[in-house]
Image (cartoon, rainbow, N blue to C red):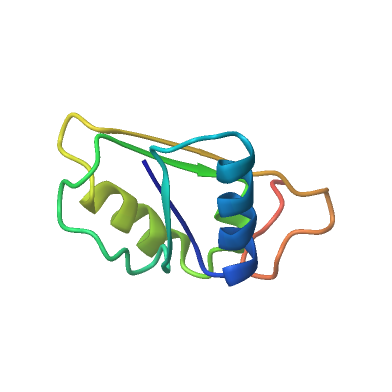
Length: 94
């Protein structure tokens, strides 16, 4: 299992929690979702939790997630922000 983030702080927190919980099958790396440093079809599952609203180019990010999946791979993404607090590149539904 691989976890990525753009910030050292989040990677440090992930590593802290990994050690605290005695998890040994997770590695972390600094990476940009718009340019994932993995080969085509590297993973069978890609998940994104509480981050998509930060992506400056959501279509590029989704394209990269799909690029690293095989044709029968799966992806899941969740995000959440308060109404009226969306980043400038996102818009609230009418």
